[in-house]
Image (cartoon, rainbow, N blue to C red; front, side, top):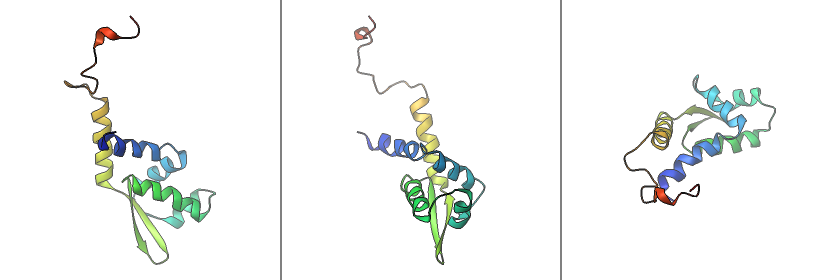
Length: 109
């Protein structure tokens, strides 16, 4: 599978969990300490760490350590790549991914 699609899909996989989508929404207002994110949810610190790991791995979020806590923010580059990916897969194109398929061989005929 193409790396472009794998990386793009990883963002949507990460956002497939409502808590992670809410965390991204919270971070849209600016950097937050993990302790502030924990206040919003009834989850353990280890569960939050798991969610944040997935959001960081897909490139949407970046973390920086300060003392015993990590402060998280949205990655401008990751957001731009995600928007670009979504536009790429939804925009009409001259050379679609299925360009070598024969339209006369459709299963509905």
